[in-house]
Image 1 (cartoon, rainbow, N blue to C red):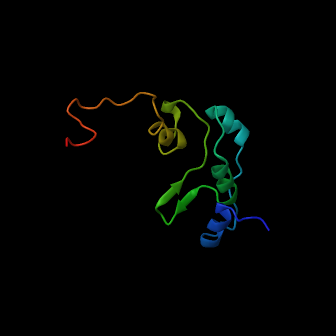
Image 2: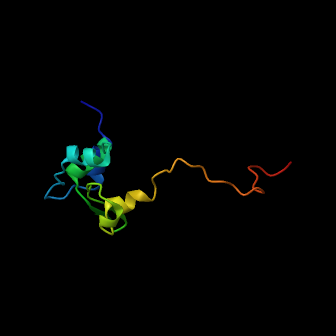
Image 3: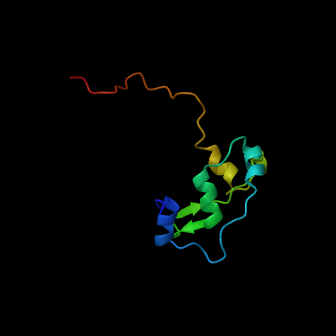
Length: 102
């Protein structure tokens, strides 16, 4: 017998919807975004689909990457724009110290 996956454990606590998950063209989305989506997200979408958990945690449907001015207001492009690293480090205030003086 194989070791249960995290998704198997989740199914015990939160059964998937009767209608099943979402059908997604992952190849098209990979092309659109320029990188593949994480395997655990893909599998979660196949089993559960988009929605909310306890009206608290929102899991969005994957969408193709479009220019920001064409993106839906509450869509993936807008949500993923903010946390994307810019590659620049923030400058610290000159009086900031990592540790208090001895």
